[in-house]
Image (cartoon, rainbow, N blue to C red; front, side):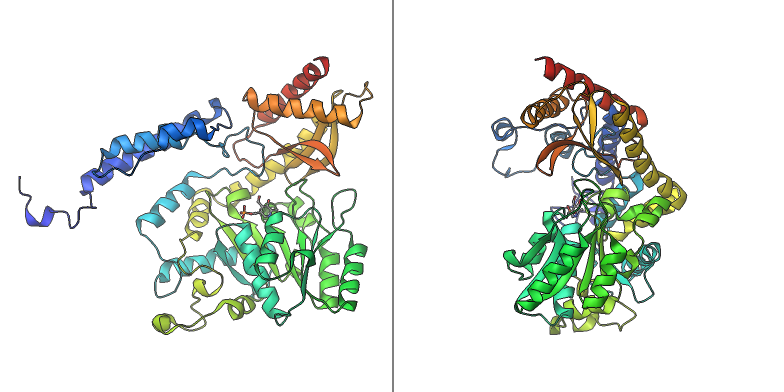
Length: 480
Ligand SMILES: Cc1ncc(COP(=O)(O)O)c(C=O)c1O
């Protein structure tokens, strides 16, 4: 049958509006079904290479297949074999529980295929990124000179920050960077990418609560300067991954001001706690940092990827990154019209600000504040449970949604080697039995269980039942 000319697809890779809508409806159905049944599913599913190869290995088909089958196959065979980081009992690593408007925003942005690198390429989206970044600026207490950009995540944000810090310091050859022994490895990797030799990425010891020791930091800086090295950045934590520790931010700001060193704060995981009174109190002084990394895909309930770098004087970021090739000469609209591609390492960028904007438009700030606060409260309640337990012992008090503990019954005197075996067995049981998804860590060398509670759908019952199961698994492991 010959179609009337106006209905003919323009290319072999196009679908008719009706087919697009049918497929989008099926995709939506598959996602909503997943979300609807998520709490009844295990919090994690994985597969070995041997299991997965036969399911997915094939040459790319020469002829297209039925798109409904393709969608159903993705939803049945590929996407579910993963950590359900948005499951209410996913307490491992750093969870991410996206809101539905955030998911739709990614779909809308992809559907409009926004190129968010220049004002010319995307004026409306650039204006919105300016607005959302300005919200973050106000939340952090930065002055009007502050600004930033959305990035893929905390790793990219710290890389961009170190480039700005290096350039602000005059790109010295023998540069050093300082961070605590608890800092995320994304930061040491970023420092080496910007040219700091690995042995010059200084790990400053932390105190009993895993906060950077200021005396040691000062001593290391003095020694390095005396040896002819040039410090380019000090990195403080506003929520370490291990324990949620917050470094002494005011003291760090004092030291960096005195020494003339760029202060970067890694708030990738903890940053949006600034929306709560607890976070505001813990982060006092953060507004004095030269740069701050925050991940909206962690504690602002957005789908991956929604990192962000904020800089107190955004011109320093633009000075470090701006390039003006002749083939982009048309994109210069003047200083009030930032080209976000000139604030970081990506020129082709997706439109990440839309998800934050759409979620906040839909639910309002009050709901976001309460949802961030809920994670902090549940971690504190988890700590209370552990402290009251005869079987569990606190390894580090709750801080910003993280609580660390281990099985160590009060009436038994177990040595470290046995404790380690028992806790490893408990962690394995939690995952085997699909009780929850947890990840362990080591604190001062000692094996520790760790719960990170950031999901807006997690209830006290989810936390309580997991801790209760851990007590039971602990006693069973000891009896065995
Ligand atoms: C404290 C901290 N910094 C940096 C990162 C790295 O961020 P991303 O994974 O978004 O690159 C993480 C990730 O969990 C983190 O928790």
